[in-house]
Length: 380
Image 1 (spheres, rainbow, N blue to C red):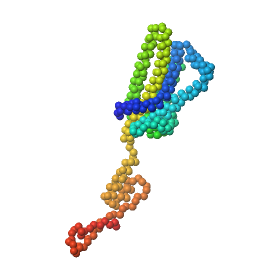
Image 2: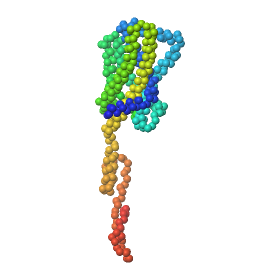
Image 3: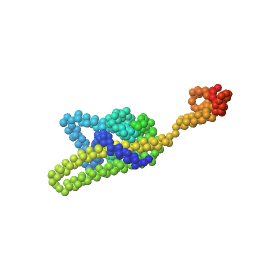
Image 4: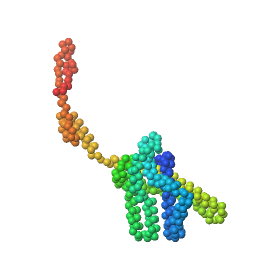
């Protein structure tokens, strides 16, 4: 496998198809929001657990927020917002992922044909339930879920790592590594080869087992790409944020403090938008990366596959034809020997005999060998 070609094709597809990136932007934005909310929740709870903030302040803040919704009659809008977040976080990603995979497959099989995003979404609807079921199975084994589980159990056990629940979470984390590894190609079996979920998962295990080293190499490449993007984001936003924070330490001006707060809010919104956009690009790039790898590995696997029904038929045809030319009376025996069919065989062809007719010489024309002798083929 050429890793450079896989990377080049995936990045070329992600950078030249902005429609797909913006199509994946809203689910990515909701994903970033959920990540920020979950991270903030775990962070504040840990600070409260270890005495960094006043005990009960987190739940008090949540109570104040619910009271604000009740006083301003905003519960309907809040429930509607939660419903939209649920759709973009758990329902639409399966449909969008199927549509992107179909678009990638069309791009590299028929590059001259224009990609219709609406058409791909309609086609992707036929794979929605299988993809949704796969995401539901894999969600508890995602690495972010494992990290948040560890943080939650660490708080509940008050830092006691010898707790039974902590041991269970360690076992789940160890199981998550081979689960994410061996089911890496399942979405592409579901969409590209139209397999059901069970056969797709089994075939993904087999493909990974045949190409274990290559699959681990692909995972390492994706980790390096994600790490590079994270470092770039931290540098772009970390340096200005650090400058603003250091500036506020050396001045007590009210207007500068207000400016720093305003800049922090605007910078947070911009960082959230950029994080969602980069997440969408990485989503399209990741799907293109794994689809290209899946296609190459499947071609290599098909070269190794042996079907025992095709080769005997080829031997049978060649042998029967060859024996029929060598011995006209042998076709029935040859076919009966090599054929596995139970259908009655045709009757053997009648042998061809050569009859030679001698014509008398013409009285007024000189006799020649060519005119005197003629050969006729008669079937007896």
